[in-house]
Image 1 (cartoon, rainbow, N blue to C red):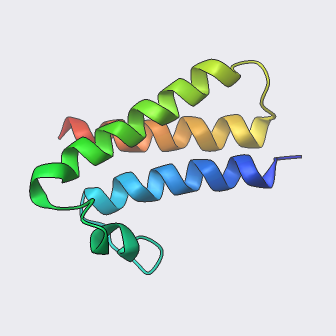
Image 2 (cartoon, rainbow, N blue to C red):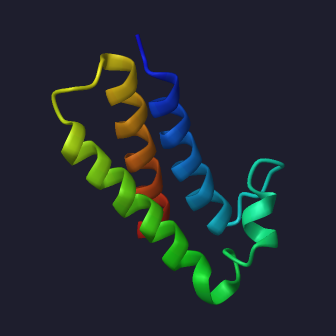
Length: 85
């Protein structure tokens, strides 16, 4: 069974990166308000979130259930695709 705190962490990091890339919603509007999404910092914020997710995947390899691993892999793949464009 997926750990709700782990799922929340992955979602938070992904949402922060997506907000930096222009996907604002109610959950990420505070990042914009705090200045994390200013044009000069937006890509840096997204890249930092991707690095954290990648590090999390490396450090937890072999210790996640299928749902957690799938969520983390999907988040990393989605952000890499967006940052490569």
